Image 1 (cartoon, rainbow, N blue to C red):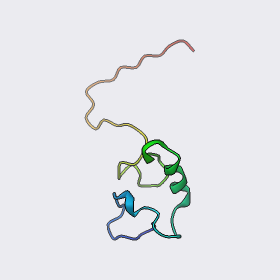
Image 2 (spheres, one colour):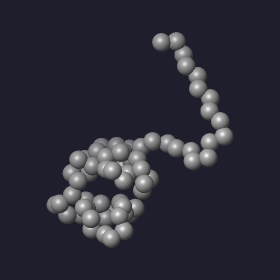
Image 3 (tube, rainbow, N blue to C red):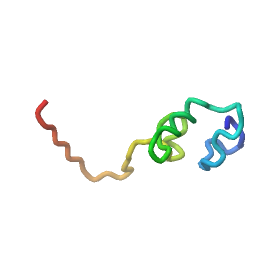
Image 4 (cartoon, rainbow, N blue to C red):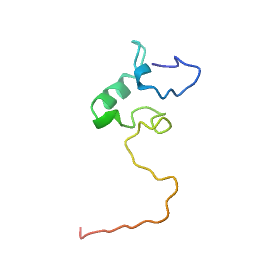
Length: 68
């Protein structure tokens, strides 16, 4: 629900999409994805609802590319 709380973004999914004035695109994207995780709204990464995986303290990286 758009700006329904002074503390934006909210991290409680029960408060999402509570009125007709809402982000229907984000609602549809979240409904169509596993665990409701999708980057459909500008703050999905802030509230941990985005679909990517991150490591905030990486110690290394291994990348293996096969033949194309």
